[in-house]
Image (cartoon, rainbow, N blue to C red; front, side, top):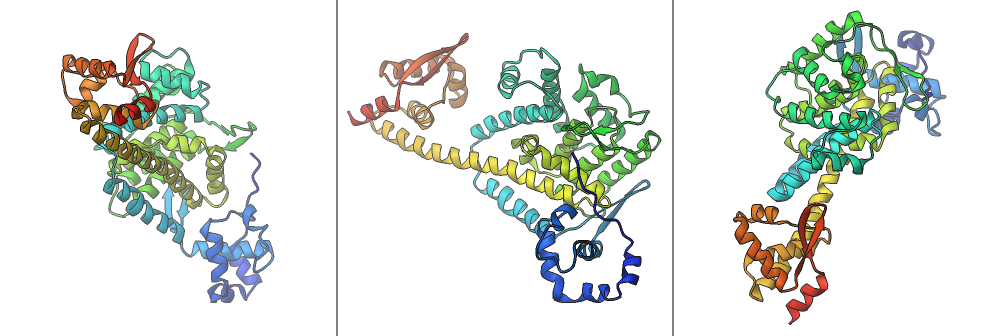
Length: 437
């Protein structure tokens, strides 16, 4: 991916050359320029084409960089300096994310049964998408069939997906643990088991590597020399475990994600490890709803922007703001999916409850009425004896009698899928006729 680097300049020299620059910087006349440029945190190649620049592009960029540097929060890992800016938009997004999105989901949640189903599907989706980012060639449908059926992986792509699911379950059990080398290496080992990257597991890399762009194969990033990896990872662990200085969990998780990619502690498997640690840190900080979304699906659907966020950060003085903004956007996209699911399920529940109420008036008992309402609300809904008995807390014999009675009324019918027998609604029309009779 060809990417233009921002112009390089020394601020001190620039000030000496242009004695009016500082006065212009502190005047209020450029506040609108700063605000609009930082709203989307424009990179050099986006800024230079704007028609409303206060000066020619390079001087305008210098003025903007001066503004950003005055607001930088700085971080140091080894010999590398990093920074980020808490722009108004970032602070607004974080506030709305915590208060409206997360808070809204807790105030108007999905039912426990729906949450269980969505959680299970989200974990599978995360495992599949994270592996597809790394090049897994298996289609989503085949991957879903493998994970849901429990069959063993047949090739490396399927193995990557299987490993990702194991990794997600492992880190869910380790949210009380601090970040240390043992934990990171174990996450990586699980993620790379029985794949071509397995030979890289067990320890950090001992040689120089280069990160290629996934589109054109050009070198996109040259990680630090391997002699520096241990010290850099020690500092990263210290940064993660230290809570004296407050950094919003989403920002800190984003920095962890970026730093694993930047340091590249392993010869292979760094991307999936970085995303796993991002997920782990948010769980650790009580963002439990993170288990109900697939952040990797949001990343996969915006892969070019994901790669650009890394490149912009590294090319522009290690300014992490680009990557932080991308992470927040991806999280928002993923959580909005959950909100849509909740709203859809709420609509289905309302339709289901109305049908169930009418059926009870016709003489069906509540379990049977609820089941017909559930099948009526969505054409693809199915139950078998096991799921029905589990759903209503009854023994299989009672479940079988309930279903037989509904079958005799012509409201449901059997459907064989493979070796399994399911029950589906005969049709909505049949239910409507039954209600009107």
